[in-house]
Length: 183
Image 1 (cartoon, rainbow, N blue to C red):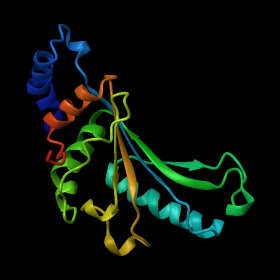
Image 2: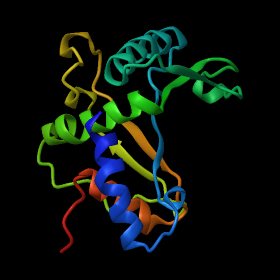
Image 3: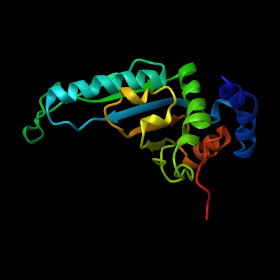
Image 4: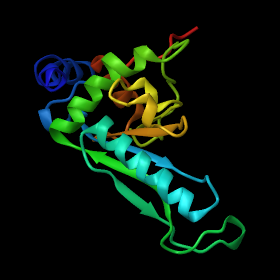
């Protein structure tokens, strides 16, 4: 993993110096990446289950890890939703898979986005975590265009060890995250 080596050799010392942190353990690090999608359509439970199966296959291909299907906790009659019905899919990446996914996202997937001007600088949650939305799963080259029944958007959350957005931003910037330019 090139990004992990980059972090330990260059990014960690740079962050340590910039933020005047005495101990290596105080330097912000990427703890995990969570990739998730919610599926509100189709309304028919059988059709939704089939859509979820398709998404599970796509997420497994994209991330290299088997995703978890999230289930409804409440019944909502207006949405034809019962307790236990599948609602979405999520994957939590750590370790080698996390670094591999981040590398693929930055160097392969994001450059494939049409009219890409960079990812938002303001999508931090004031706790040091960064969230971004991807509008099309087909930006990942592994996704077989013929097997998808519909273009779907999904979310990626970068969970960091810091509680300060400024430090998390700087760390992601040093990783090569293509943030939009300031005007």
